[in-house]
Length: 103
Image 1: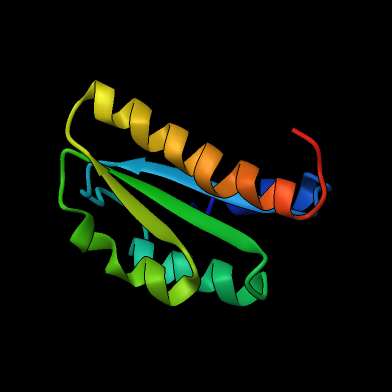
Image 2: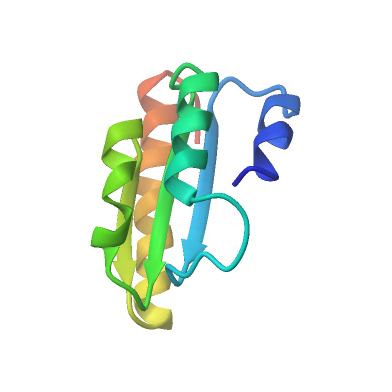
């Protein structure tokens, strides 16, 4: 997440999204909740963060509610595809259409 943040700001787009697919194991680096809070604070809420908790409990990522993010669980490939479709169509694309942008 920390590595992706600078690219989000250089992208030159109005809406910014960070999508993380995770098994819930933080093997190195800072705590993801701290990074998510930093991104939220530094972007003044401009970056929307979505997690797909793959084969792990979505409850591990309750901190996302504090930063305006969301988490969806998936336990297999089909559920992963559904989760990604829901995030794209239900959040990212829906927000663009609500703002008057075209599909």
